[in-house]
Amino acid sequence: MEVGVARNGVPITTGARVRVIGTPSGVKLATHLGTVVGSDQELDGYYVVRLDEPAISYCSGADEPLPEILEADDNLIVLPG
Image (cartoon, rainbow, N blue to C red):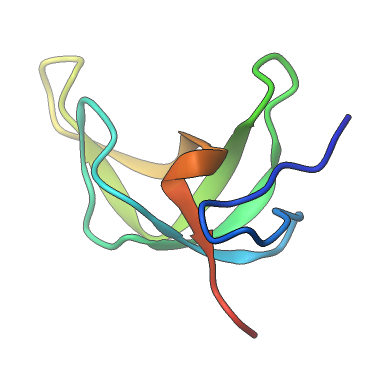
């Protein structure tokens, strides 16, 4: 599988620290910062991001903590470090 490139032109690798741009649909983010767990096995260009603080998913009718989200590479900025 090809390594994706974040919005800032930096390759996305497992363990990279990232900032999520915008707000994913159906989710309220407590923080935009997280760590890449890995690429999605079914959707090219999408990555599992473990957030520093769980987001709240409100799609199911009840607010549920969501420690990880699936996000497209063009919605991520890899942070220096």
